[in-house]
Image 1 (cartoon, rainbow, N blue to C red):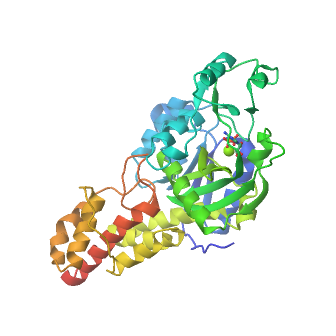
Image 2 (cartoon, rainbow, N blue to C red):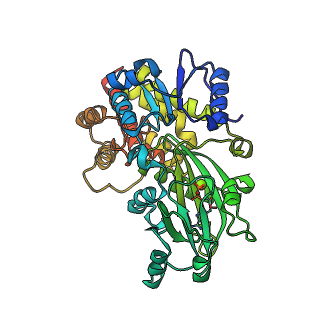
Image 3 (cartoon, helix red, strand yellow):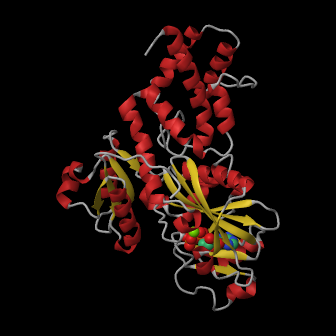
Length: 428
Ligand SMILES: Nc1ncnc2c1ncn2[C@@H]1O[C@H](COP(=O)(O)OP(=O)(O)O)[C@@H](O)[C@H]1O
Ligand SMILES: [Mg+2]
């Protein structure tokens, strides 16, 4: 086990998981909590009276990982629970408030709309159409909107099931391709990949990446592709940087504190393409063995880092949280440290965002302005709610912000200014 753990006293994790098939993740979380001194409670279902009364206090500890309740609870019931959780800010949650809600969060077609609109990963998003029958596929091809080879995919499929490679029209029209229902099918270009990756994002950072080799000889075997062949820990710093950037965006636009992001690389162009974000990804697929990480503990340690804010208050809390997590940065670690050491050399940022104004305030002080002039902006920062995906400065709107790599920079400006301000004015 690589990461250091702090012993957590008097904390209990609530794991919301009503699907018994996921017993491996449940068992592992139970073992990890026991191993680190946490309590553990499994929430499989919620009784009707609690739902009727919106009385959920007995179900939740202060740390909740939301996966899925069992099917006896419907979408509106779940929304009632969310509404309750929203009112209880003292509860730290993972993956409760996902963008689009539970009905759409695992829908690959919906996810692609979130990726496609993003200014950074828009260009990494394969174009995707909904189709109801073979005619519609032919029409898309005829209109030049998509080309063979293409892929037909279930919008809500998992583990590579229900995905078909369609090399040409003849194959499309053959009996190999589904005759029956076309309820939830989408079509997208086939990507000739060399590898694909599973990247785990926790609290706005990519904590680990498993590379899977794609088998040239079995292009249409998606079950095997999804499971992965010759899996290795991704160690190439260039690849890690790029995957981190993409995966953190994928998690962010989906509003997920924890996500298993699937990314494939086109071997002809080298471009990465986003495939899907899994909001209750387990790690039974050898992820821990391959990467040397312990995902269960990483989730608990994020909660540990989150709770420092409760204990320490805004400035000290943000500082402690940020310092604990700087180790996860791929690009901005050096810049982060330069800023804190008042050695940042940069042009003035344009715009009127809080981030831009913080940077200008910092540069003014660096150039000799009195730190007292920063009183207003310090107050403003400290009255701004912290980001949904971690205790750093960022947008509080779900699906925006929540990327530590980006948000650590304005956070560093704030920390540097506040530190100097306290020193000069003797604030404790
Ligand atoms: N458009 C595509 N082109 C080539 N390979 C694909 C494509 N879509 C999916 N795959 C392969 O199939 C695997 C499973 O697809 P994915 O979209 O992640 O769905 P699932 O939910 O079944 O895992 C991926 O890991 C990837 O290797
Ligand atoms: Mg997948």
